[in-house]
Length: 259
Image (cartoon, rainbow, N blue to C red; front, side, top):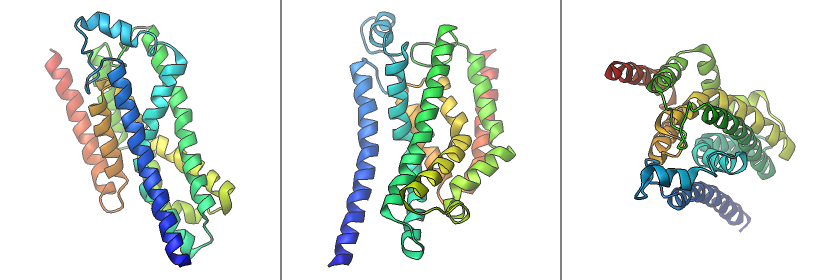
């Protein structure tokens, strides 16, 4: 009976976790509808320019609402990438002295780092907007900025820093073994560490939002899909450099097409 209760509680927690991911994506979709945007982040009002100004002028040019959008987007995009990490921690709940409180601590630490990143990228977007480097949709106003971001993101896939950060994200069990701490506070500390490596691994993929537009949910959805694949135990290490090559080719192709 006790075993059944434990299994049931585990299932409920995982269902709640995945429900939170779906809720985050639904919230973003609802925000797009309230702003009269389609899935590509384009205004669907009769007057496109006026609609963009009215729908986005306030929310995309002030810190609070824009941070809220980025915070929800971070939850929607990064929580799916936590599945291998949380599964690894659960394995240690039976083979070591991991606890469910520690499991929650890992989640909180991980998400906290990404919320901090959301605050930073919010400030960056507002700064770029003030200099008219990006538009109200968060898309680059210059094709050359898009080219630079694609090339930088592609080249980063081949760097030692990317390899080091991805190594931790791809094999969280090794991180847990090397930095093991018990209880909620231990899980929190490990979550903060793992979240920091994850930011190092995925920052430039987030910056690519300025290429397609941060309100382009299909673009950000593709970025999420790749980041999930990149962290899968069996295939993650095989896709990092090919994706880098694809991004570099995309950047070069965009530059050539501009002439």
